[in-house]
Image (cartoon, rainbow, N blue to C red):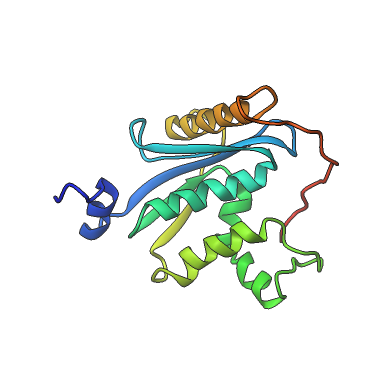
Length: 178
């Protein structure tokens, strides 16, 4: 394996389906948030945002995981929001309705969804990326790992975090996306 190839790139080239767990977290909603993905306790990434929503962090976690893992991929998430979007093909309705949900409202987190759909739906062969739901806080070791990583990032992004200016913002309530 050339030194420049990552383990993920080599596995993708070999055709092995990679499994990645994702999670998002938010302290308050909206509030400081974090996202994480992990393939193992040694292979993971995470980040945060000082003002966001839980759903936004759930989508961001998947987007970051898909960006980093070319080739066949199974995304495991405790987010019905993410899994149902692909399982139930919500994205088809959003696109057909000009990025409006079934109630005629603008789809939340469009910037992230558009980028994720460009990667998963438009940029890869059908079925190359699959989604599986796992029950959160049920003892699944990998789900617990990404939950911990995302929450750590949310705490780091919150008030008092180095370099974070935390200002109260007007409350907005995320809406259902179907």
